Image (tube, rainbow, N blue to C red; front, side, top):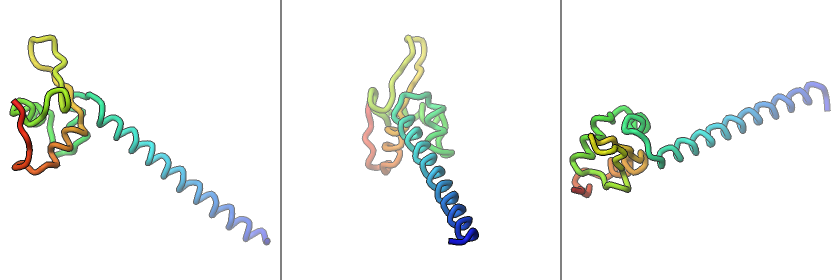
Length: 107
């Protein structure tokens, strides 16, 4: 094997290593994002996870309209003076991905 061939193999190995590292980092970020979507978060955090079409106000309005199930999709963490909601973005995503005519409402 010549020096040029060795250099070419080393460069190829380095490129493959870089691609594997980037793929592993992407997978780790996806796992973190997925785990975060199943945790209780503020509506503002959930809105940023769900995308630009969603705002904290829309989420709270939809909670008040009965689109989400208490205990599964959202909880109230206040001590009684005014509601302070925590939501699970993954559950909200599931509800929002259901066509409006097929969504169940809760009172």
